[in-house]
Length: 497
Image (cartoon, rainbow, N blue to C red; front, side, top):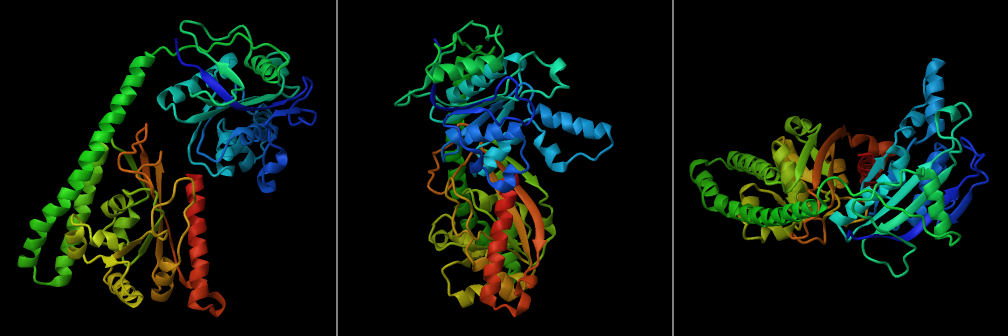
């Protein structure tokens, strides 16, 4: 017997059988369905009927947590696809907004943007069994991580008159969102129990099955005989593999933390003393120490990937190797961010929090590399930054001042803008993505996520601070403008990644 799925909340939109295309005016909104006014007007204007039903149903059952979304639909947005094809046949350039929204998972992506989530989503099209395939996907996710919740959104749009000969007769506009969990909630709305060996419900279309489910949720009909097919792989073996993989990554995380600390001590008792003996020039000695740290961090990054602790991808980061005298500004989602950035950046200088200077494993490293303490006198910090940038070093700064709290967007402080404005230094924007979250603020080293974190570092354009002095603005006003601009640019790029 396989464990069931519990439905914690639901929402639905049912259009009359005669409704077609964009005309959902007489549709019934049921359950926790949100009103269209809950979608910002600027976003609502570029959405068709299909996307609006997906988003209204999704917003109605989604909470503030990073709940995964599974979008299931056999045909997707038929009306929009038909319009785009007609435009192409008439040699009319297709609408960029329409083209982007025609992608099968686009409504789920817009839903994630509206709720500020970076949890991710999955889009499924499985013919007449699309609803059952969506339930199977949700069940597998909850089997992998029983503590999470998954929202399944099934939607079909009635076709235009020209398309009706090519789809099933009587296809009605239907949208259903189910918030599913593995643990029984206080007041479950419905229970789905998979049965081994039972085939999917192939004798009833998914849109009709969804309508029967809605009738059951309303209490107007008994539950339909619904079973979704057990996957062909051995579930027990798959779950065991997941547990072994999680245990391995937990063990390797402990090992790499140990290696990182011991590596700092090893450099302190071997390489750095040798540099002090054989390299008398202080500036050259500091430069060699930073190069040594750069290569050590690159080896550590490669070790993290080789052991399967993280997967890593660098995009457009060649600029970090060629930039000179630049301030590198990045968001800070993980404890590994500084390791990744220094491993990618030539001639890296950093502003380091005071706690690192008191760390017995890292104290010798930050002294040998002459990294800047963040608790020094502001004048000393500014002078050290000016000297470093004048030498051609790249100054890495996390304007948040600490790691990003889970579920919040990065919020920058004005320190980096003050440095850029007063020293006239260019700024290189960098975004760091980590999904699922790992070593974020408030997370312990042993809070290893069920899936391997995917870390991506992306380089963006260089920003000149001089235009922010427009209209003879004071340095304080200019730094405030620049801080807001940098914060907005980073957050916009994170939403689009």
